[in-house]
Image (cartoon, rainbow, N blue to C red; front, side, top):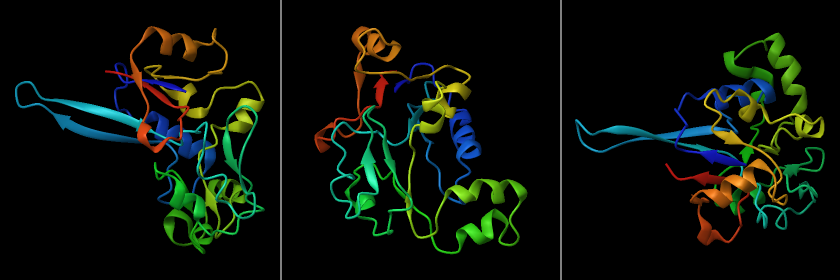
Length: 199
């Protein structure tokens, strides 16, 4: 994925689309947007940095998993098999980006309103298991159907571009060749697959 910081307007549509599509429990967001103010009036402005799992080429979360629940697909997507996860959180500790989320016991029973689950929560929470770790998986169910991840499809500014970085003719590959870009925490040595075009 390539995220163009020149056109991101910080609308949080990606966060909302991810939340709605994945139905994550309270306080768990796979797609977040960090904001900060820079400059001094009258030359002040806001900057936005959307973040999500980096689906690293060398993901430290995979080899530390004692059960094989954390794995990397052939297409590069890093995911979790909930039925194998024992909730030890070794993967969360090893992730330098803090993009692993623990489903606290009881949270799937109380939901957002600390009582009976809504119909939406009942439908969506079936995907998650209490006491396990969950994360962004690039909406791999959608990708397997030839669709874009929800955050990409929803972005009104088209700041997110998704595709095969191994294909030199893909849109992300072309953008990275033609623009100055960076990844987060390059010193961690994980080789992230999420790249940012400089603002």
